[in-house]
Each structure stands twice: as structure tokens, then as C-alpha cells.
Image 1 (cartoon, rainbow, N blue to C red):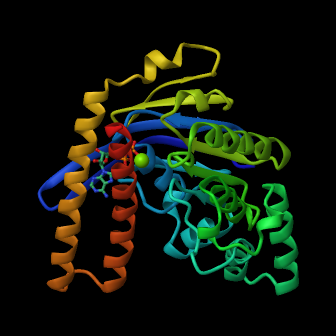
Image 2 (cartoon, helix red, strand yellow):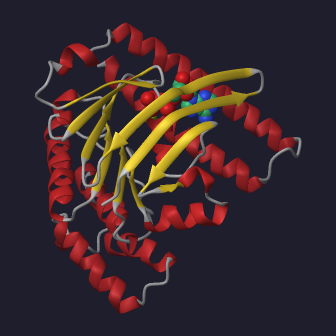
Length: 298
Ligand SMILES: Nc1ncnc2c1ncn2[C@@H]1O[C@H](COP(=O)(O)OP(=O)(O)O)[C@@H](O)[C@H]1O
Ligand SMILES: [Mg+2]
């Protein structure tokens, strides 16, 4: 179980002449063993916040204290270690390796930290059992349903027994009933395994399963409440046209960014590794925006 304290976080993205303030003086306090939902409209800074807590990225100002340590002061090596052992990530698009079986996918993070073969196999099977998928252990991701793939992703996130689970719209690609089952699984895991879970969702019917809900607006936490405290619908409701417009604008900005990246690479300003890493991150967000836009067309 981890406790997470973010104090006065500022995060500004600069690409070329355009700057965009993603987080502006954001503070949030997540208790040890809490199941916290972060909710808010598209572009409010939810993904940025999770990336900072997960040490995928660093803030421009402010402190992030996880279990008493300021992770913003970590060296690159300490950050890698932190990502491997302290945090389990679950994303909207099930980040599974397509040519490995469910079992091998769960074993993968344990290979990275050097757990012996027999031990990791045993643990991987236990984890698949825990998420109700032992019988599908030899299936590859494309032989599993969306809900099953997300269950495997959760088992992967748990592989190295991290005290902190970060989930960014983990039900974004799933139908309502499957989404509800996945969120219930998070809730059960949080109780049984004593994990601190921070989950981003824009679906307030799912936010009800959390201990507390923090509402993000324009890069700030504007409110933190218990599910019973308020009519969440009225806080989270954003007119559909506004969502559409902001998604279209973000999509265009991301496409511009890909073009800039390609230019930077051609001109030798960044390495191939940097190109691939940044491209994959942008592509993940583009995929998620496109799926939201498609959903709204129906
Ligand atoms: N890599 C980036 N480069 C430039 N701007 C970004 C980048 N990532 C996010 N942003 C901007 O930061 C703000 C917050 O984005 P994000 O954290 O992705 O929001 P959310 O996950 O709530 O939709 C948005 O205005 C977005 O346009
Ligand atoms: Mg996001």
C-alpha cells in the first residue's frame, strides 16, 4: 500500500512555439490503501497526472511524495526501478504483447527483474486465477475478448506485487457490463491485496465503486468527495458539442506533434529511440481520441 501526495504541481508542455498548461497548481492526497477515482473532462490533465505519479514524466514544479520519498528528485535509474517495482500500470488499450500467451505476458515483468523461471510461472498462474482466467492461460491476446484482455493486463500490472496501481481509463474500450465487472475487480483487489489504486474514468456510474472521487478541471483538483456526497452527474456533465470540439482540437494538435517529431528526427535533433518512445505515447492518445469520436458518431 502506498500513500501519494502531490503538492502544487505544475506541468507545461512546450512543442515549438505552442505551450500548453496541463496541470496548474494541482494538489492531491491519496491515502495508503485507498481506491481513488480521478474524473474530469477530456483535456483536464488526468493522463498527465498519472504519468507524473508513475514517474513516466516529471513536473515543472511541485513535489510528489510516494511513501515518504520525493520521486521528482529521483535519478533516471531510480525512476526505472520505481516504475518496475512500485507501480503497476493499466491502460485503456490493453498493453499486451501480441505474440505472447496470456501466461507469458504475465511472466514478462518478472523476467525483467530476474525472478527464476519456476517461481514466476507459479506466480503468473496464481495471478491469472485471481482475475478468473486460468483456463485461458495459453491463449494469445487476439484469442481473448476485450474484457478478458483487460483482466490479463491487470494480472500483468500485479506481477511484481507493486503497492500502487495506476489505471488510465481502463474501461474506455469496454461495454457497460464488462466495464462494471472490471471496476469491481479493481475494488476487490484493492481490498484483498491491500493495494492503493488510482483510476481515471469519465464514467461517473463507475466512479461509485471508489472510496473517494477527485474532480479535475483545467489542470486542478476542484473537488474531492465520497461517492454518496453529491449528484456526480451534475458535476461531470459536459455538453456533447464541447467534448466533440475539444477532442477534435486535441487530435489536430497530436497530429501536428507527430509531424514535428518526424521533422526533428530527420534533422537529427532526436534519436530513433526518442522518436519511437514519443510516437508510441502520442499514438496511444490518438487511438483513444479516435475511439471516443467514433463512439459519439453513433
Ligand atoms: N505531450 C503533450 N504535448 C503537448 N500538450 C499536451 C501533451 N499531453 C497533454 N497535453 C495537453 O495537456 C492538457 C491535458 O492533457 P491530458 O493530461 O492528456 O488530459 P486528459 O487525460 O484529462 O484528457 C491538454 O490540454 C492537452 O492538450
Ligand atoms: Mg487521458
